[in-house]
Amino acid sequence: MNKKILLIPLALLLVISLVDSNFSVSEAKKVTLRWATGQSPRHFTAEVMKWEVAEIERRTEGRVKIELYLGKELMNYDESVDGVTTGAIDMQLSPMSSWSERNPIGDFFSLFFLFDSFDQWIRAEKSITPIMEGIYDKMGVKWCHYMGNGHGALGSTVPVGKLEDWKGLKIRGTGPDNMICIKACGALPVRLAVGEVYDALGKGTVKGAVTAWKSHITRKFYENAEYFVGPLWLTCYGVTMNKASWNRLSKDDQQIFTEVFNEAKERSFGIMKAGDQESIDFLTKKGNKVKVLTPNEVAEWSVPMEAVIKKWREDKGKKGFETEVKQLFDAIASAR
Image (cartoon, rainbow, N blue to C red; front, side, top):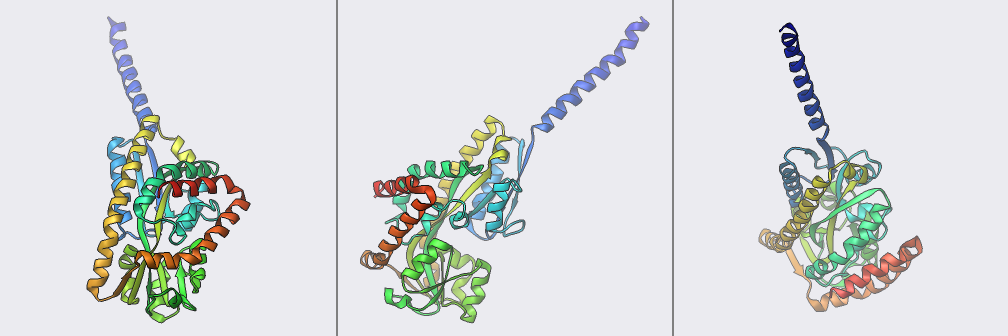
């Protein structure tokens, strides 16, 4: 009888030990990820990112928590590229131009008039994404998805209605390849952080800036730039993840992430497509002078780009990306 009485507390201790052990295993499975970007909290892509975070946390039933840092709160665009590559952060979003040093062909978006339409990009994307996945994988980075941003346009303090109007103007560009296109149009490309553009336009330091239609509004460039012309090119962001961080996830959670990534991409594309026209309508209503290029004007403005694209392809090939460049342009051509 005494032995039975002594066994009761031992049994209770065993149960408590097992419960505590299971609790520890459960807790160990939880993953916290840090997602950093220089994107403005006011931009529509920030809303898509917030949706992604909420969906991932909901669908993983709390196994994964994502801390989202917007508006350079933790890192700006370029810093986040370094961060996700080294593992200082787990995820990042940036313009493709921020990757230009590590992935020289990833900034193909910056080339003016490369795509005839957004629908052409949608068709080409299915073939282009595997090319990008292979390049990022070699850097220890998991390619997640494209994030639509909108067609690029020029906002300027002087009218630019014809190609010759670009001549001699100081124009802020978004990245190396984008600035090459600006130069080919006859302007003087200037590299400025996006946070400096508003004041530069107001003070006359630059005569214009190129960015997405929507960004001209969210960043209030229209207050200092009276004239707008576009579309010039298709702007896009990329979401990437440190590969080691990706491998910390269970197979089930990786599948959930993949599903959410695909849905977020489509969501951003839909918002972007509607947002371009909404932006043009907004600018017109505000009294800004907006010029939407006709097909004939696009053909005329595209002439200087032929030499730019030819050299772009040659330069990227010399850097060891000849195969990827061919695949990229084959995909673009097949999607026309």
